[in-house]
Image 1: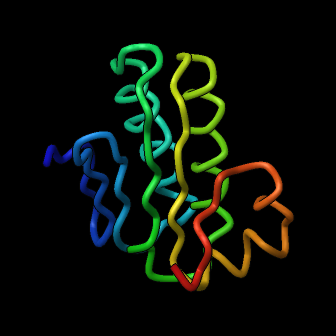
Image 2: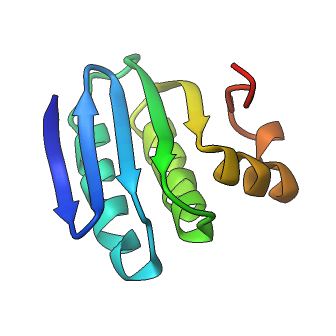
Length: 111
């Protein structure tokens, strides 16, 4: 596991083919979080399957969803295959409300 970013209670790690976020994602940290994830994604070989794991995000956060969408764009631009997006229950409800489950391979909340 490689730590990509740590800021207060927020942590971003790369674990194999997964970007894993834990803690609270606020707008003050979203830019740095997005950038660290984009940089990691850009270093992956084209065709690599990737996973976004936001199941450890502590609260409802539209900033976290914005970062996730930015990473999805970066993955697509790098020719990577976004296999699955894992969300905390609170983020899952927000993503469902926003209709993101139609756009991204969001794992079922009961899974």
